[in-house]
Structures are given as structure tokens and as C-alpha cells.
Image (cartoon, rainbow over all chains, first blue to last red; front, side):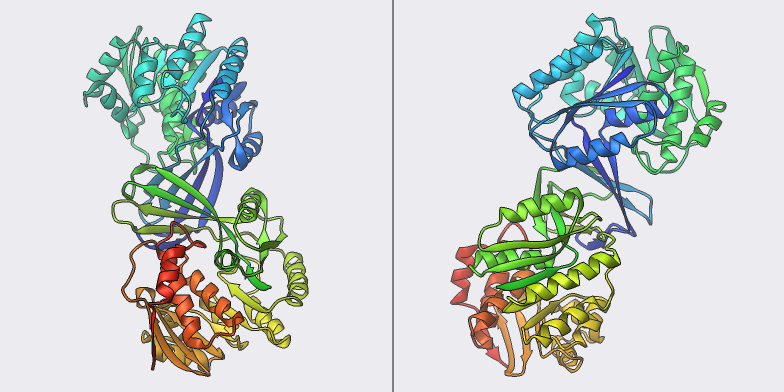
Length: 306
Length: 306
């Protein structure tokens, strides 16, 4: 199975309003609830593709219960191995302005995880690794989890020779990358924050020097740039797709892992990642994708060796 | 006891962000959860003032459970008589921009109430009226409740000679006012929408002609204007107070009811309403007030007979 770790899972709310006007009162036309957090989105896409997937991390309080109920309703072979905590799972609110299609995002910080809960998670993670063919460590850290958490989890996977992908930002990324993950998937802004360089190619080179065996940088509508031990490639959809980009990066992670487990070479991994990512832009919510768009794009993503 | 009716109760979330920028991603610095909906706010203020208060309306789903748990923690003699429903209690999100102090409000529409649930509520309302010394009918209607709901509830209270206050807007106000409530408490915008007149005095006269025995219009920082069978008064704080106006109108309703039950004359009712309303502007959330500010203002609100 593929193990996805979401230490700061979330109940994602999407509010559609006719037009977002700061300091005004808005009637929400449509309110959607989804299980969220980057690793949860990755897992939902993997399971929809047919991969046996296990979700772990933390969940607590009424929002945590709702998250787990929604997760149980997700299609595909997905197993909930979230650890119950006394704190309350955070919410995120995405406000979609129907007039422009743009999204304004509000993210709660997350629950206070106690040292005992973090220790219990570490133990469970060790057990879950026994059956894992690949691991994805995704998203922000809730308060109470040490900033070096991802570095620790990367080392445990590496010690068992399990491929590990890290998708986070800021100090947790800086520390995690030094533990030599097989792959990191930053976006351009995260790469720039890590390395100080706004040139994605230069920044990705720097990220490899910092410890990542491979770097697959998501570049929004411009697709992906991958610097790997096997070579350097750029992959892009035939034309940019408009829609809601929330979760596009998580779908790219799912595509990379899915193709890795199918033993595909890097150009085909990038094709799958870019096609899934673009198909997610055309879907209503993170963790979901438009299957027809995905299958069409699989034939049409352009990969160039650099 | 005082009965407050909140057909569209809410779990109120307050998110504090450094600055609200449309189309950007925000980390929420502080997230507060409160039991909400206008009638619930009124009840919390009445109970904090020491009045035996009963909250009824609908609550359902995980958000409804959280609302009831928070309500049970509210100070004062407050009884929860909310009716469980299969739908899910709505959320409201108030985003406070820390840079300006302004609030952007996002309100979910509310649960689908079934005809059987509405009939069960009607039955419960009849039972609760037996012990009620006054009734407040507050806020919007959830989908499924007939638009004439307030008119029906006003008539039932009037038939039992129980003073009834109506605080709503739009079509439910238009219909409710025709059932001849003892008092309505619109703000200037609601009065203008009802009557077509932006002059509060003229609009309040029209509202009385439409059926309200008395009209107490809240005018924001300018206090209140009351047109009653006993006379016409304007009441205002000595100077406008800055802060979060959310819930100020609900506290005014609580002040009017509290003073009515204490058999105070209209000028003293308005003093209490304006003092509580201003003291709520100085408190962090709707349904709460700054007691020191309230007690100070009781001596300093100016009431003028017109």
C-alpha cells in the first residue's frame, strides 16, 4: 500500500459567494464540506486511481469526526489510520468569488498535539511502514509537533528503503530536505523561500544540493520541472486550463507516486502528474479530478528533456 | 421565563487575520467558536443579566452538537429547548481584519427543515408559551420553514396575551409585522427595505401603520429611535464607541425585553438597550458585553422625547 501522512488534516469548507467584498455581509450560495489536508487529498486521488492507500496523521473533536465520516465515503481502496487526539481538527475555508472564479483561502492553525500523542503517532508510523511501498509526507505541522518532525519521518522510511516524498514548506521543508528524501515537490514560491532564488531551475539545483535526491517543482499552469538522478525534464499541458487550482499540487504528488509504483520512467511519471494536476483544476474540489480530462491529457502532455 | 426563538441557529466562527486580501491565502491567527444566531445571542445576554431564559429553534448535525455544548457553558439561567433535526446547523464565519478592525461576514443558508420538523416545532412552541412572560422571534428562516412562519408565531403569542418582539428582515418581516407584534426592532437598512424610505422616522411611522404596535429602530452608533403608543424618543450614547458591531442589535433586543419585564417606562427601556448595545461593541463577540461599560453607560445614555 501507499502511506500518506497528514499531520495537520483539515475539514475543508468551500463557500461560493456571488462576489467577495471585504467588510460586507455575504449570503453563501453553496457550502461544500470535504476531507482535507494535503496528504488526505493525495490519498483520495491515489485511491480513485485504484491504489491501496492508507491515510494516517491526527484527527480530533467534532470536525475530526466529520472528516473521518467523509473520508469513509471516498471512493476506492482507502483505509483510515488517523490517530485520535484530544485537540480539534482544524477547518479551512475557501471562499470562491463566482464573478471572477478566484479563491480566497482562510486556514486555521491546527490542534495542539501533546508530546504523548506525537510519540503514539511515531509508533503507529513505524508499524504502518512495514506494509508501505511508498510514503508521502504532506502539508503543514500542527502546533506541538516538533519542527524537525518530517526529517525524523523521512529518516525512518529511508532506513527501511521505502521511497519517501516530502511536500511541505518553510522550516519543516528546510529540515526535512536535509534528511535526504527521495523526492520533494515544492511549488515555485516554496522553492524560492527555501533557496532565495526565483529561478525554478537554479532553485531546484540548490534543493538537490541540500539533500533531495530528486526535485519535481510544480509551476502552476506551466506544468512541472523535474531534476532527477536520471535527467532533467519539463512537462506541460498543451494549453493552460482555467479553474480552481486548489489541490492541483496534491494531485501531482499522487501522479508521481502512482507512476513510481508502476515502475514508469521519469517522463511518464511527469506526464501522469501534469495530467492529474490539470484534471484537478477542472474539478470542483481538492482531492478530486475530472477523469475524462485526465485521460485525454495523458496523450497530450508534452515532456521535453533539458 | 423569557422565550427566544432562533429558527436558523448557527455555529459562529470568528477568524482574526492580519489583513484580509481577496484571492490570497491567509493563516488564521485566532479562531473562536460561539453559539450563534440572533435569538441565541439575545438569550445569552438576557441570561447574563440574570433573567430565566429558554432558547428554542432547531439544531442538528455535528455543528448543532457543538452549538448545544457551547450553549450549555454559557453563564446564567439559560435552558436549551432546541429541537433536534436531521439537517445540519449552519455556520457563519466572521473574518476580522486586524489592520482595520473591520469584519467580513459569510453566512451559510441553513438546514433543510422538513414539514414534520416544522410541525413538531410549532407544537413545542405552544407548550413553551405556557410559561413565557415574553417572546423574542429573531433572525433569518432556514430553507423549508414557510415564509409566513413569524406571522404564525406572532399570532400564537398574541392570542395568549404574551408580549412578542420580532427582529428579522425581508419578506419574513413584511409578513410578520402584519400579524401585529408588540414590538419590532429593525435597523435602518431593514426599515428602508420594508418601507422604501431611507428616513428612519418616516419609515418607522410606516412600520407602525403596517401593524407593529411599537417600533424601536437601531441606528448603529447613533443609538435608537422608538415610536410607541406612549410617545416617540431618541436615545444615544454620549459618544460613539468603536469596536465590533456584530451582535449589538441582539443586545438591544435583550435590553428592551429585560426592561419590559422590569416594568420600566420607555425612556428607561431605551437606556438599557442602548447601553447594552454599546457595551457589546466593546466585547469580543456577539452575545457578550463589557459589564463595566454597560453600567457606566446606564448613567450616561441621553434620551430625548421627540
